[in-house]
Length: 129
Image 1 (cartoon, helix red, strand yellow):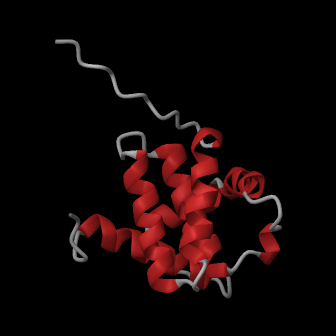
Image 2 (cartoon, rainbow, N blue to C red):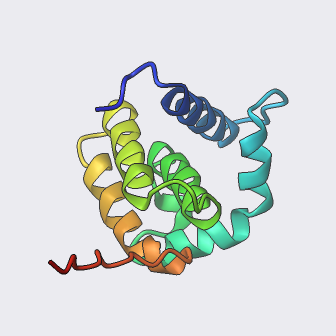
Image 3 (cartoon, rainbow, N blue to C red):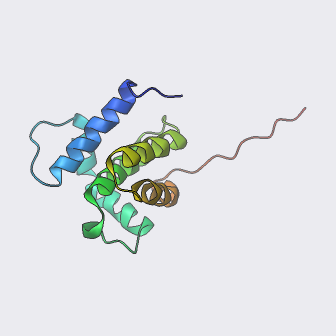
């Protein structure tokens, strides 16, 4: 079980907070990953829009949008991080900072985003006796 003080978890929260704050005003000091996310924002938002077509980007709750942008970026670029970890972390952040439906919305959108972000779930190999 991961710890609430895990450095990777704390880093994700810092990135999320910076993305969220940046949706209101420019943030001159932010984690370097925010620059990488912003550099890929068009592709990230296209994936989010395709995964949640009933919600235009401008109408998605800003907390949920910040969580989704971070997670989709990780799905696109962090091959060494297991898909399940990325989704679990995003859902946990959505539960902590979002509304009542944030975690289920984020979970559903990310489940659809896996393939679009270039992540193929590898089936478990059968072990032969």
